[in-house]
Length: 94
Image 1 (tube, rainbow, N blue to C red):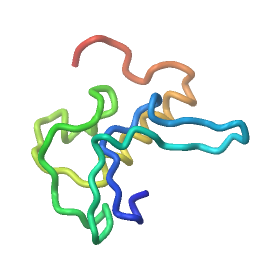
Image 2: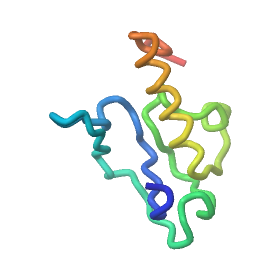
Image 3: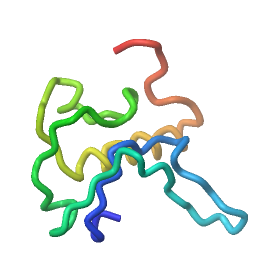
Image 4: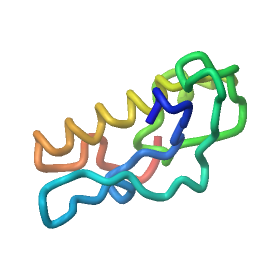
């Protein structure tokens, strides 16, 4: 996805589907952005992104610039939840 220049910006378990063959499909590209040079080299974006529990630490700490690494962080959170069998950060507030 990033190699194609797409930055999803809202990866979470609800946006990762598994088909009958066990293949993963990413959905809900409503918040995504396209960068012609590839997502890893995209200019920094500044609008709020990502469901709260899957936000990268720099976003939680108030950073106003981010890149494709926010998707990488969110994917890591999803994988940790799969391994733990429970929400990574349960709660109702930060």
